[in-house]
Length: 202
Image 1 (tube, rainbow, N blue to C red):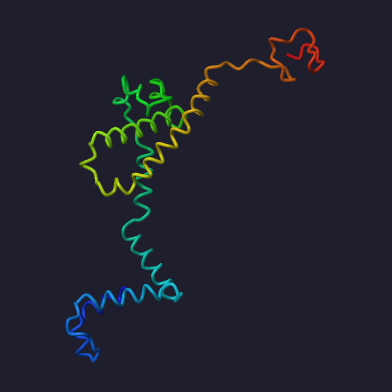
Image 2: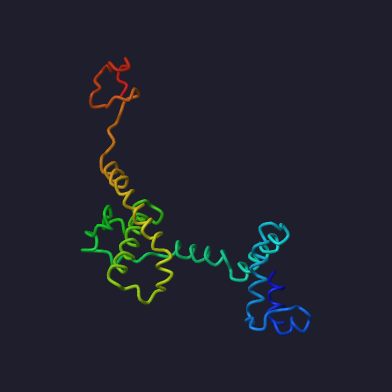
């Protein structure tokens, strides 16, 4: 398909007329390649061979542009990079986007829930702050508009997890009470456990 369009683009309408192909005199030079491309696109879903050629060309173009290998490599570098929490200490911790984050989380080991939650909260806070403050001018505005829904989805998903993180923190702070083999708290167990009829089961 690409070769056909390219050849017709190089030949042009005038040369097609010289070859005996009748065309209107006021036809634009780019009309023929565009018409051929539209015809091929229309035929493509019905011709398996054209579909295979189109898939091969697309795969080749992606490989030449390092898609998706470049994106994956960038994601891996970002995931492995250290995160600087310095700008998010102090009053920033009281912002709604930082709900569930404690200052001690910034020094937690990587891949721990506390560290990952703090990192996610900082990213959500940063992008929302910059969007509302109009500090995104140096970024690609079209790209930001394209991914606006994704950013909102991430923020919504984070809000839905806040209650789970709060529950996790409460459980971490509450010491587990030792239990007997029957599951009864050891504080209620004396010489004989009436729940399981086991003497000194604690």
